[in-house]
Each structure stands twice: as structure tokens, then as C-alpha cells.
Image (cartoon, rainbow, N blue to C red; front, side, top):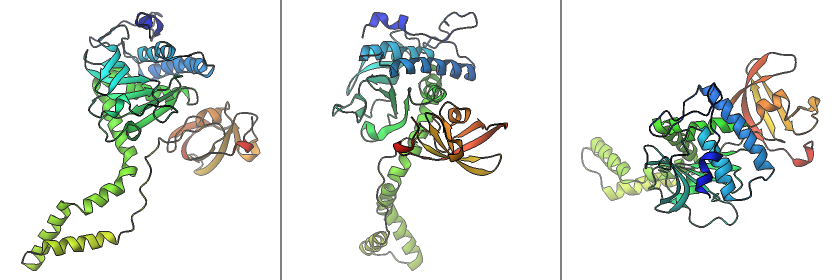
Length: 351
């Protein structure tokens, strides 16, 4: 990547006079705008980039770095012109990454690696983020700039097990992408520590289903349980219990439990896309409604809605459990909750 091209290629937020904002923070942050304005501005930028990505305008990693990643970082408040704040080709114990975002200067808080998408064809067996000692949030960007995966550094295991969020700047709604980027990657969220705290919570919620049964099994067979059981037995009998017999009893009880199969690694919540059947709860009518989001002319009587209709735009990109507001034909906007997202068969999707 051409380092000299970095600052000029990054388009940042503008102030009321239409001029690019100057740094207002010694650590490299740009002016902090109101949340709604910040998200709207970032969403517009994401949509611009999404069109270019979808048309294949970025042919190599340097294009993605200079024309996708850096513009978004500047929009997120990072002073990309300061090499001590946004450092190129940063070396980690496990290898080099494309960018290290630092606060204070020289202290990496975010690491960005391009073209090393875990699970993709030809992915290297080792990844710079496999070293869990790197105390910075970690972002993998696909070689075309379209897919982004976020990883928590303190989690155990390889990078695939430490993913807590992902986004697709082409398929996902611009506002959703903007909210995710602002939550985890904005300079001010990183500086305040909010990005790390939110990532830690989201990582914990995601990993819990994959680890709960195994951890419970280990806890029941651990030494602490045996000590507690021996203490209770001595209290009940008045004399110490035989540790070997106590251990045998505990093992027998654990052996009677019908453990469910260990679930695979938890995957990020699915987002509504074209062709998906979406079950929603209408808070106003207190009714369950099912819609199918289609790309062409919808069949309203069969519950289809167009991707470009008001309802389709409200549903598109939403996750299960997320609440949105939709305007039904001839009615006032009503809040809904996404209850279930089901993939639809391609044969029944309008082109």
C-alpha cells in the first residue's frame, strides 16, 4: 500500500461550513458529532462504498486499504494522517497486520488485517490474531472489502472461536453497518473503553451456549465439588467421610446425567435478506405476522413484500430479536419485533 496516498484518500466528516473537521483530541480523534448525525453520515458513506464494492471497483488489498478501510476509519474519528495514531504494517507477536489504531499514541487498541478472512478458501493456517496475548480488538476484512469480522482478544482458542460480530457492507443495511462500526471501531468509543466493554459483553453472550455444558460437566467433577460434598457429609454424619467413596458417588451421579451434544461454535445472529421468511410480532395489534422479502414484484396476498418497499426496508438487515418500526399501508408506523428468520427456497423467490 502507498503510505503517501493515505491521508488524501480518506474522506472525513464535515462541519457546518462544509469543511473537514480538525483534530480536537491529542490522541488523534476528530470532532464528536451528535449520535444521529454521526450514524446518518456514516451510513451514507457505507452505501457509497457498498456500490463500488459490489461493482468490483477494488481489485487488490491496497485498493481496499486506501479506498475502503481508511475512509471509514476517518469517518469513525481516527486521524489517519498521524502515523502514531493509525500505524501501517504493525508487527504483532503472531505476524504483521495492516493497521494498528492507537490511543494513546503507540498503544494499539484496534488491529485491522485485510485479506485474511478466517474460513475463506486458501486462508493461511496461522493468523496474526491467533495470539491471544494481543490486548486489542481485532478486525478481519475480506480482500474485496465487503466482509468484516470482529474478534475479542481475551477469548480462548483460535480466531474462529473469538468472533463476536460480523457485517457485510453490501448486503447489510447501511444504518446497521454504521451502528456496528460506530459501536466498536469509532475513536471515541475506543478511547473511553466503551468499545471493549461492549465487545466483552457480546463475546460472552455469544460463547456461552457453546461452552456452558462442557463447563458444567467440568465443575461437577472438579475438586471444589468434592471438598464441598465431603464437608456436608461430615456435618451430617459427625465423622469424616471416605474421600474415595465420596468421589465414586459423585462420579455415579454425574454419569446419570443425559448431557446434550456439545453445540458447535455459536454463529452471529442471522440478518434478514432477500428471500427470507420473517416472522414478526406487531406490538400494536398484538399479532404474529409472516412476511417474505423478495427482490422483485411482491405477491401481497401471499405475504410477500418488496425489498424496496417501506416494510422491506424496515425488515432488511434486521436480526432476530431486534425491534424495528414499520409503516403498514394506510396506517401509522407501528413497532415490531423480529421473532424468527427462515431461509426461503430459491425457487419461490421473485427475481
